[in-house]
Amino acid sequence: MDKKETFQRPGSSRQKKAAVINDMAGFGRCALTVALPVVSRLKVQCCPVPTAILSNHTAYPDFFLDDYTDRMEDYLDRWRKLGLTFDGIGTGFLSSEKQIGIAGRVIRDFRKEDTIVVVDPVMGDNGKLYAACTRQVCREMIKLAESGDIVTPNVTECCILTGRDFHEGRWKDGELLAMARDLAERGPGKVVITGVPAGSYIGNFCYERKREAEGCSETWALRRVKKAGESRCGTGDIFSAVILADAVNKVPLEKSVKKAADFISLCIRKSEELEVPLTDGVCFEEVLDRLKP
Image (cartoon, rainbow, N blue to C red):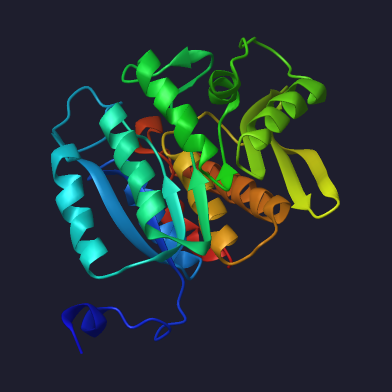
């Protein structure tokens, strides 16, 4: 038996595995700090691919950051030598064209026929791009999103992905449907447009397209939940972590979206009850036992 076979025994484990590509912050709940416990809670092994190591996330006034880009390929080469594959692959914030390219290679190299790929195309919010998102980064992110099975942009990111103009205020169902269809036609069969403003509610627009022998069928729905409090760091990471683990576990998309939204609302309410600062994210640890596989 060679070394590869010693470490990688195909069919020897029935536990599902998901690789998650994101940064790791020691303080402030977001990215891998959130994905590891949430994906694990949903009974999927979470295998992190760190893009950067931070003392705390960048919303704080000072932070240490060690960019991991130049070490990611060496890290991943060891996985390649072990012949690893994954039931799920999820991507989060990627700070450069090079990181997006590496994420694309992870998808190509470690994807099985039935692997679920969830792309969270983190680029901006409230109609504005994040500082690291240059035009070229956005162009590369569009390509990455097209390789996903599920893509979870917020409204701003969906406008970027589809070349539409962002506007303030209420979004009509027809506008959301047109953007979701546009994305689905280019690859992802499932689209969730997150953070859709709806007065005192917040919505998530779910779209699914199924390609069948006789053609395509589609379903969509806008699922609203009552706003629980102010926006907090890391809630999008919790959302995408639930979607990824549930997809690996073959939970229907609409059910998964409702689960994620309800859990985030619960986390926000608990965080406000305990007077947790907004930059500290949500204290999901207090209610993690309420999240069910």
